Amino acid sequence: MDFTPMDFQTGKIPVSDAAELVLSVVYESGFQNFAGSLDEYRKRPELERFLADVPTAWDETRLVSGDPGKETTIARRDGDRWFLGSVTAGDARTEEVPLTFLGDGRYTVDVVRDGPDGLVRESHEATAQDTLTVDIPADGGFAAVAHKA
Image 1: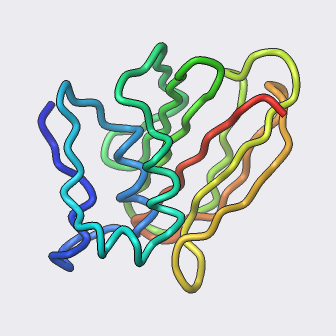
Image 2 (image 1 turned 180 degrees about the vertical axis):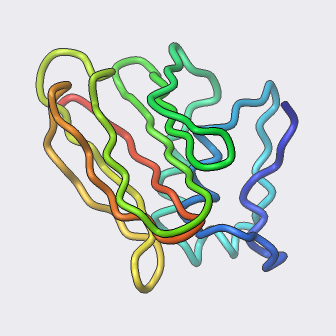
């Protein structure tokens, strides 16, 4: 697939900032290119921080959940880190994502989501038996990275 996310400078993105960030995990291209300008990334420090850690290739990909045209949640592994991307269409909702893809042990899960004044980062401790719960605005999403605690 050829798709160029992160085009914040045009002001034409029809989804939330977090939903656009999620595309760096959900969509995979042989040549992933982020279209945003550095100035627009710097206005969104949590976006810039998350993108700095997104790998160029994945070791494993799992569909966590999906309903075409409504929502998709993808987990992708890079070494011992799991990146999670969840994007929705339509009304605001609360997403509940089972973390069964995590391996044994405890993980720190850093979630980047839309807040009232821009992107925010929250940290949670979790295991593979837990469910991650995130409030998502209309046409929104969240990105996360899980690493061994």
